[in-house]
Each structure stands twice: as structure tokens, then as C-alpha cells.
Amino acid sequence: MIMKKKLIGYSIFFIVLILGFWYFLFKGTDVLSRSTLLQRGVVKNFAFTNQDGLQFTNLDIAGKVCVVNYFFTTCRGICPRMNNNMRKVYDAFKENSDVMILSHSCNPERDSVPVIKQYADSMKVNTRQWVFLTGRKDSLYAAARNSYGIDDPRKAVTKIEDDFIHTQFFALVDRDGNVRGGVYDGLKDDEVEKLISDIKSLLKEKPNHFVNGVFNN
Image 1 (spheres, rainbow, N blue to C red):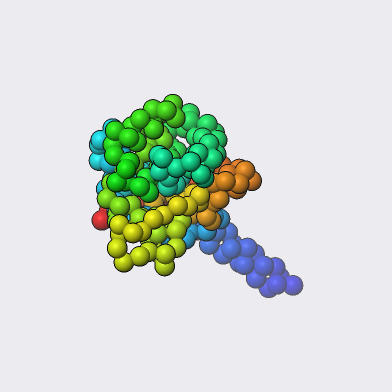
Image 2: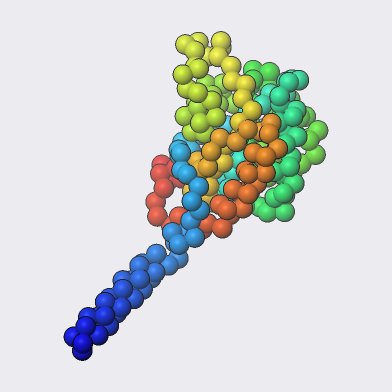
């Protein structure tokens, strides 16, 4: 009986010891508070041009939770509806500098810096938080397909001038440059609400203190 009590006591002691070790090992990291949102990709290094004609790179989103989409300024189909729904995301977090929105042009030949500047001004948003981007078409399309996963890479055609992306999907990026959650349909109210909820979840995470290649390459 005494031996049994000792074994129980030793077992409890070692369980507490292990739990304590685990807690102090990961204290200060985001492991204990990490969201269960799926990681489905990593943002690769990029360099585009924003509505003010300034270079905008992956370093500019380090430590931020970002929402990503693609549009073009002359679109009269899904783009106005999609960006109206993106405004709901903007309005939900416009007081939070840890959230950014990146809207990329999928028609950069038409969407020059002055054109996207005019479009951005018409949206009447803080363009330090909701950024409008243009650049090389091949680079923009590679980011959509290979970083954010909001268009199927198999849709790419041999000649980039013949290629065209027209997608209503949003991507969500965490503070460490990981693409998280699912692909959110920007035309569906329930998916936009789910996106807002998932952003709140990611905001609770601390940036990873370990090396992440997306911001250290």
C-alpha cells in the first residue's frame, strides 16, 4: 500500500515536472497561443510598386496579419463586389495597425501607378493599411499562384501576355508570412465573416522568434 502511494506520488511529480519544463521551454513564443488555422503555404520574397510609386516588398508585411486579393481597375464584373466586401474587412480592423490589406492588379499593363492611385483615392481608405499594388505581370501572377494559392498554377499559359487571372478569392497571411486558413470567397458574406473571425484568431498569435525564411532570405 505504501509502495503504491509512493509510485502515485512519483508519477504526479514527474508529470508536473514535464509540464513545467514544457511551459518554460515555450514561454515567450506563440506556441501556447497558436491558432489551429491550417498553414497551406509561405509567402515568397516579392517586390512590387504601391499606389504612391514606392517599392513595396515582403519586408513591409513582417509582423502583420495580411489579407490578399487581386482585381483590376476597369473591371465591371466581380471586382466592385469583391472590394466592397473587402471594405468590410478594412472597416473591422481600420483602427488596428497590425492588419494590412494587399490588393494586387491583375492587369498591370493598364493599371499604372497613376491609375491605381486614382482608384485608391476613390476608395477613401488609409493606403498605409490598405495597399494597392502593381508591377511586372509575371511576378504578380507568380505570387497569386505560388505564394497565396488563390489561382491554380495549372491555368498558366506559355505566353505571359496571353495569361489572365480573374479570381474572387482572398488569402490570409499570418505575422510570420505563412498563408493560413482556407481560400475565402470574396463574393460570399459568410466567408467574409469567417475571414474576419480568422484574422482575430491570428492577431492573438505572437510573431515567431525563430528564423522564418520569408523575412530573412
